[in-house]
Amino acid sequence: MRLAIIADIHGNLDALRAVLADARAQGADRIIVNGDVVNRGPDSVAALETLLARGDVSFTLGNHDDLLRLWDARSTDLPAEWFSDPFWGATAWSAEQLDRAGLLHVPADWPMTQTIALAGLPPVLIAHGSPQHYREGLSERTPPERVRELSAGYGVLIGSHIHRPAQAVVGGVLVLNTGAVGAPANGDPRAQYLLLTAGPGGWHPEFRAVLYDRAGVLARFGGSGLLDTGLSAQIFREEIITSRSLYTPYWLWTEEGGLPRDARTWDAFLRRHLAPGRA
Image (cartoon, rainbow, N blue to C red; front, side):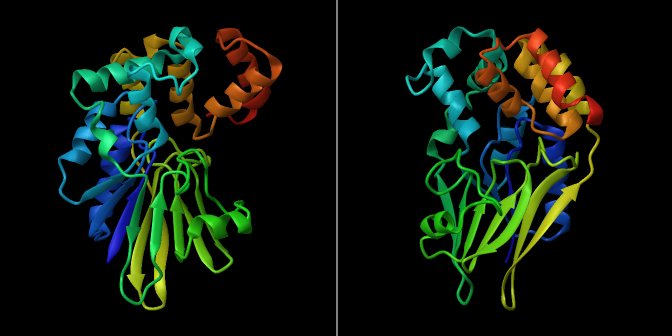
C-alpha cells in the first residue's frame, strides 16, 4: 500500500492539483487529506469540490475547516470581539463563499483521526494536529512523554498543522509531519506532502515537494475579491510568496505589545522580522 497524506491546502487550488498529479505519478493507492482544506487562500470552494469529486480520498478535520463553521454560527467558542474586527475579513469571506456553494458544513462529518492497520506493520494514527487537539503540532520537538501519551500503542504518529515536514523516532514511535500543500512555512515554495509506503521492515516515509506556478493563486487573491477584505488576506498572500509563517508571529507580536493589527504595525513587523529574506 502506498498512501499520499496531504494537508494544509488552505484554498490553494494550483498547489493541490500539482500534489494530486504527483501522487498519481507515484502510484498512490489512497489519499488522506489531513485537515485544513479551506481558508486563507482564494480557492476554498474549488479545492473542496476537487477532493469531494474523487473516490480515493478520506479526510480528517483541521482547525480551519472547523473555524469557518464556527464563524458562520457566531459560536461562543470564538472570542465575541473577533466578529466585529476587520482583521478577520478573510475568514468571513471564505465562510461566505463556502456557504453559498453549499459546502460550509461538509467538514462536520470528518473525524478527528484516521487509522491504518495492516498485518505485520506498526499501526498508524493520523490527525491534523494531534489525536487530542487539532491545534497541537507534532514534530521532532514533541517531548518523548507527550509522544508516548498520544501514540497510545500506535507505532506511527502523523500530524500536519505546523506547515513544515518533520521526522523523528521517539521512544520507538515514528513521528512524522506532512508539511503543507498550499502554504509551506519552511522556506520552500513547492507544494509539500507525505508519501507513506508499506514495505519490508515497516512503513517508509518520503517527503515530496512539487514545483508549481504560484502566479495563478497570487493573482486570484485580487481577482476573487479576497484581497479587498483587509490585512489578514494580505498576510496570507505574503506567506505564499515567502514560504514562511507570518500570520501567527505577527499575531503574537501585536498581542505581546498590546498593538493594533493594522497596516502600520504590519509594515513595522515586516521591517523588523522579514525584510532581509523577503522574496
